[in-house]
Length: 155
Image 1 (tube, rainbow, N blue to C red):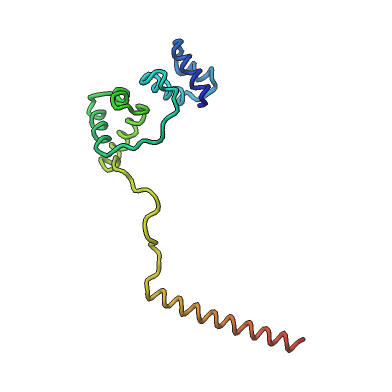
Image 2: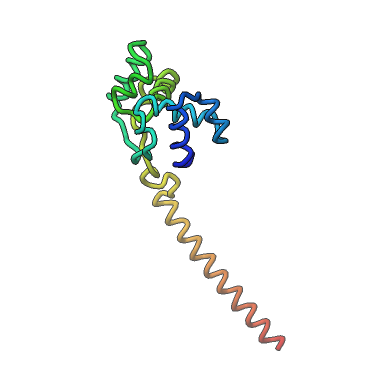
């Protein structure tokens, strides 16, 4: 949603319009409007602010929040408000991953390309390839010379 659409949506929420009505008036998806409404309920006008850069959360923090949510101690919205999270959807996503894969789903994942190349040939294979390369280079030079001599003989 654009900044203008977010501002218009919040104004309509404040006037008492529901998410469906706001979505149809602005011509945007109902899901995006519902997520904005949830953020608006948490932070009122703060929902209009652009999100700051990606925050990362530690394993222990996520685990505590998810355990409280799964245990029924608090709703996703309450936990999001209490911990200053951007959206209740974040808590729901963590809980879904936790139910599917357990605690390991909440651990940080390694980023980037893994170190080293798995398919690099060993030292013996490398020596064999160098010898083959030398033989093929010599064969190529021989064939070039042969072609040049044939061309010289025709011309």
